[in-house]
Image (cartoon, rainbow, N blue to C red):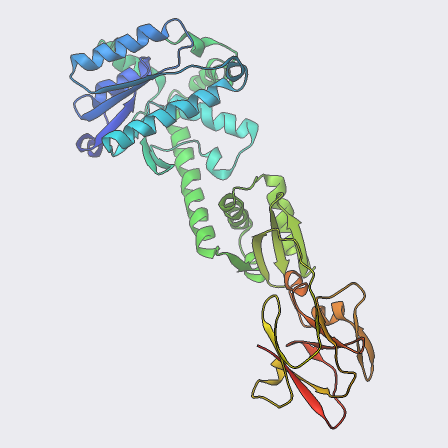
Length: 416
């Protein structure tokens, strides 16, 4: 005899009922609870209308609220992955009914054999750790709580319950078609497994719980580690499977495509000794590694700037201001530059760096690029840092490097 956990009997539950044996047995074991039946007529088979009337009449017999929808599909939709599309439409309707009745749960008639099939297909196709676990008796999806009270039972258990309780149901002829992958697993592989172990569904449920528990732990560890940005050193100290979970979360957050190939490539980038790297994730997003910092950001086009200053005063820059005065102020040395003042100091040019830029020092010249590298300036910030130029010489990279000043009369430049 099939039973369900008592905790569900005090809750408001939407049940997806097709009229097939699985959903009618689920209906039978929950019909004394506070339930509302949701039925989807996909309108594909000629029996669909008969099944709709049957479920409707059954609900009327037990005075149970009945909600239904009749769907229409275009020819193109029928040619594509129909089962996936039908599932999406079915669940969208179920969730709508959950909202309408403010229900606690959506109950689905998945059972132990369904779990075996799902796990085997995930292994054959390749999946995430969570995918390899199949599904659980209770889980959250799009904010809704889905329960599967029959997950502990096999199809034989369900058939025995239906026979013992004289439950009427309809057989969906499409369940016998070899056109669908799941049906082939059901017809070819499950009989072999059950011959080896009649209670194989218990073993797969145990396997599923183990995998999903492991996934839950890893997911929690990844969430605890993850922020908008993180340390390369800390990341490389994580267990390899937690690394994958962290990167998967980052990609999901930005709705980016994720695969094992992409994630493995990102792990390789983050474990390399190259301090500054960028990885294109999509047309809009890039992952940036800057020394010990990693983050994902939207691509931004670099905007060149060029200003010519010919007098004392305050001038706006892209990210700050420059103040040019004749008297010394209280700003710290990193924010200020003292220049020898003569009739050739103006114009003072302010621009972002260009390829081949160099600064002159008493010991010789040095590329601005190398100055940025030595100062560990992130690559993403290098194009926005202003260079201060007079007499065709770069004399100051604010807060980074300046030339030595000689002379008696001076003017003072401040970044504010």
